Length: 495
Image (tube, rainbow, N blue to C red; front, side, top):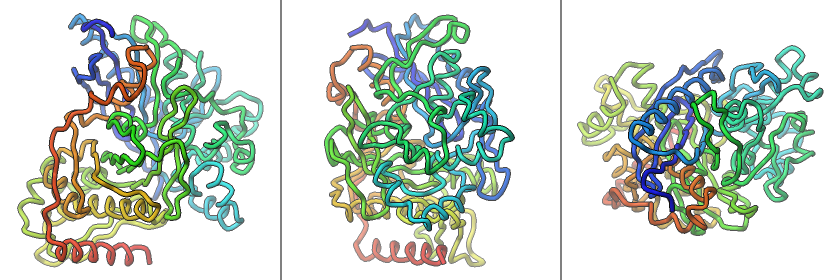
């Protein structure tokens, strides 16, 4: 092991903000900084980011953390990067300038294209090779849309003048001053272009989605040599050693290394991932087969359910409706009510994800009366997160995953009311770790592995520590009544 003065810098580039987190070599979180950036909604169902905002926010928080480390006498040995997945950027291979805004994973603009491909009978082919469904959530149709709607882009792509990547690739390209156009297996597995059985970009998928292979990055293990940062950014050069998409990084940070272990992350959306080991599981319930992590060329697979809106619904109550000043107020507002009084919120602000996959669905609120107030909205929003999680657990059970408790992480899990309500609705124990920033911890672990400080991921299990657990205490009759109300609300929304 390295000396106590060494540290790992984890860059967590998320949907609404970029964070830099400094970890000790023992996995202790030393300090973190955060910078939000603007969300763009050009049309109904469209969500974009300015690529410059992504890069500049990452550089700002990283520089602040590097300055802090220097002031504390800490030596940063390596950098890990975790990122919002599926978000798609295409940029000039020479200048690094993006030819269009980043199209965010939540974006629904390619729904009609996905439906057309499904009607043409391509779903089985896509699912067999990529493990994914035909949905605008994934990167391939986003990339095709950019190539089709930016003048000259498709010809430039065919000529090898452009790069496609998810956010990790875009950041690494810039941090290395164009020396590395790379990604890792987890991010590649979320594009609809990667064959997760053969571990390569799939010629047939690229042809179907009309994405030239000349655009694509080299795919590496999660712990690998991703290049060195250019000294012009941080004063010194640092090796980029670990990369994983945010949900896979959280799986590592939650130490879900055993087959059957399940974690659920609550950020902008909610993402549940079960470790299925060396064998890929083919879902019968519209869940996704994906690569959980890949080490030394060996892939460990996962089964994932994706909810598009969880924390974002509280953000909407705060910024859109101005019903609360900050997200933490939602807990007191929910606690102030003895029950939900029949108010249900279906947060389909950007469609519904698993297990429904309804991109055209839109948000709805049911059961409001003259007595309904801000507290009811806050409680209904929080309850919706638990109900959606219940839907995912039920879908996983249908695929043979026996849930024996859930590890949770992300910003929302600080809400004790929500955690208890979730335990009650799931009828499962909930475990919250000391370090809730498990996405960042996961790539810090990968960085430690690449640097040789540990010999395997299992050596890192002791880093995970329990902060609090929540046991179910709700009577069965009450649970059934609440779930039935939710299911009725979803059915009405999907009509």
